[in-house]
Amino acid sequence: MAGEKKYSAPALEKGLDILELLSEQEIGLTQVEIARSLDRTVGEIFRMLVVLQNRGFGFVLEDGHPNRIAPKKRPMHTIIPGMAVKDGQAVMPFGVMGGHFQPVGHTWLISSMLDHGLDPQGALDLARVFAYEGETEIENGIDDATASALAAKGHKINRIKSPHGGGQAIWIDREKGTLTGGSDPRKDGFAAGY
Image (cartoon, rainbow, N blue to C red; front, side):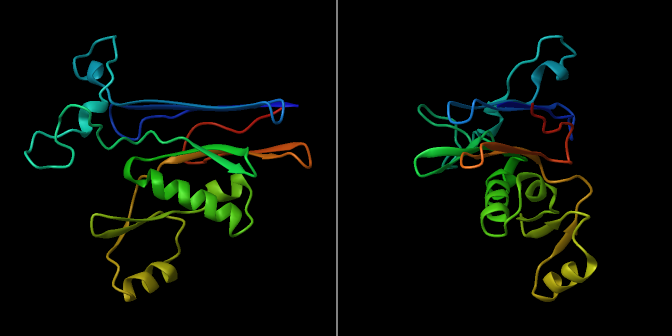
């Protein structure tokens, strides 16, 4: 049994280019996740055909700032592919994109599956909530009653127009000998196997 999932993300903001590839081949033998992201492409700014990587965008020049450019430092980086492990074996290569949302998205995906019993597709389909810069950003799938209840508890609600990230995952069930894939509806892509 083999399965492969490819993902290509359209830009949500000018100059953003992210590709994520998840692959699981021959259950138990190989799990691979590859993520490539150019963030804000320098090549596009200059109307060049060559696209230059710009992950240095996360550095600052301000003295004393944690992200001050300096030797042996790394900027806040949004490429954090995940690999869930159970009993010493990989059970799910996965990735959730979306800048600052990414670590929250990973937690949201894992919790939705392990705590609430959803499969990868169900977990990725859920509407998202994200506390960011003093606001509680909510996607359109969050109903008005929930938004009002959050506001009543002091949250400053911001209904966002663009979705929070995107993601994909492949759950490996060795007991059943099956793979269950999911691909976020917020992006181009699909889960497929053969």
